[in-house]
Length: 432
Image 1 (tube, helix red, strand yellow):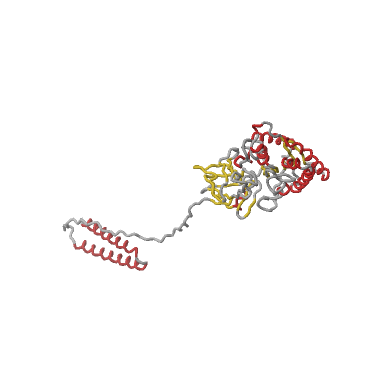
Image 2: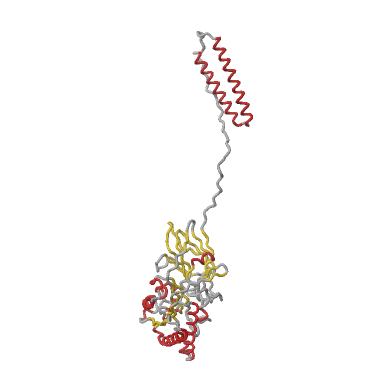
């Protein structure tokens, strides 16, 4: 039993000493050394005393059973130096904002970057990109400076992939406003095309910024191998192609995305641009102060005197002009000769900007009396320059009264018929 007592007392003493040493962990290093030495000395003395007791005590001495209470140890929280590197605070995710200059890399057709606005005033000009995400908002600006009244506003449409039905279509009825272009609860992958449906002179359309949702991405769509440039008047612009003969023109019924030009280009799988103004002629114009030779070399003659870069050269330039000149020729025979001379000059202008392109000069059969003049201009130009890449084509026009749109212009169904004839000629010429 004595041996047990010794063991119990020794264990109790070690426990107390351990607690005391634990309490000393919060002191400085010199205090830790001193405490350790003192504890060792006390432990040695207690051991000696225990030995004396064992020598003096007799084996038959009885000791009462000792029950030692559990030592009360103080709960000490040890503070260690933090060696982990503190992470920099993460900024909250925000929508991605694209400015006008950055957006120009996604532009299609002729666009004008001016005063932090990317203007896409021509028919079917705008933006195209591969999109993955949930949201697109745009701040758009517009001016009615060249509009006749509130019925002549710029209209914009958003298309997904190859659809000819717009995802959204709306008028620009404010000088500056934010429009929701696309929205989805789940991320969507699609090629998005944002274009102006109405022509250059009926209200401007410009974008100052595009906001994509958090994590949304925009990528450049690769250019196609082919490129067509269309230069024409109201027929090319789609004037009234969604309207009726029974009422006048309204820009809500002009759809440049469903004209023979855009239909043919999509059918051929090539990129295109459209420069078209209703009423435009070579000798005079019925709705604006510019004739064809003023409009063609400029990026956007209604807003700026900037020369167009012609940085991308088309393989084919399609010209469809002469309908409006017929109006002036019918009034004054002197316009007859002027028209032919102006056509010759336009050919020279187009060839100078596009030295390798095939030029296809068209007129709808309703004005087929202009075709001989066009062909004479081509023959004279070819004879003087040796240019053998200029051709003519007579296109169909409306044959049934129900196919007339606003102000006796062709409806969309006729635009498809014109496109079919044009596509056949383009394939015959082997332009692509």
